Image (cartoon, rainbow, N blue to C red; front, side, top):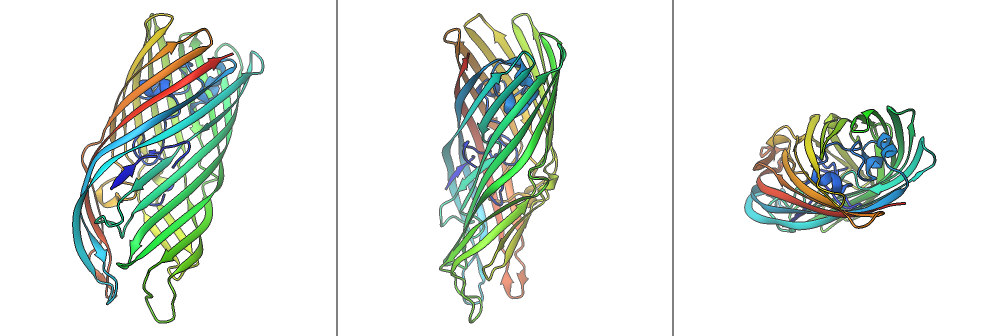
Length: 431
């Protein structure tokens, strides 16, 4: 099995049902934060208010006033490694579509790249305009076709790209405000085996909209506090339309053809969040902290509809709201080198093993990060960040083995022993 996190998620490019809008490796659920390599080095503490790169566009647009005209480009590689083992019911097809119990073990070992791009322009001393292109959510899980849980999932891919034009205004020496109106493109692909012989391939894509609003208070040039609110996507509901291909699936009843391409769609809620970040510089050290509250409770159902004879399918997640806490420190060694480190705790929205699916096998994660900035010349900087993410061993145990109208529903008991590494690099240019 190959298992990746595109969240989780990751490309800027990349990002499921069981899934729908990441992060599997870098943030809980399928939320991603890998749009700043300076931030990566301190576990994203102080997001949007530290002022040492242009990623405030994606964190807190009010923080854009801390920088002038310039831009940056970077990428992170997320490598998740470990194994999954366990057992699951597998549908054997006719006669009577009865299930058998299968077991196995698969390796988790695959890297995923997540790029980002930011640019901003200093209109005046008071106004900034900027644009960011990055991946806020994502997921990719790829199992072998014959793995023990293939009836539940084989491939799950969520690709999400945000294009975020943003504006910031400095009211006075103390207060700055910012806002982003964001166009979000999403693509979901979901496959699994069916009835012992068939294969189902569901693929959908589309656009949505949401907003981000931030405020920053500067007590002095070395002390600041920021608050940001990110709205739900497309006024709570996000609708995608696409196709549903099924082939090799035996007919459940005479006269019903299961094979072919069918029109499908889905509706889900993407989470809103609140985040508070602070920064304080004392001598040669800068201290930062962030606390984020993400409202995953809106992601309780994921319904896939199809004009095929299967009609629709609803997955129930019962996710909970979560907290993320991060602490970081920067050491300004000299005019050329800055060193940094950070720790963080990122709570998973999955409340227990019964609510965890093999499409989104998410769990709490603990961050330990380090990084540096090297000033190449007066205009160019290189930022490098690294983080190790520890995920305690966890299980996905859901479904029911009892017979329903002569058909046994699927049940999975999978144990995941997986950790992740993130390594990123970016270059900044100040005009």
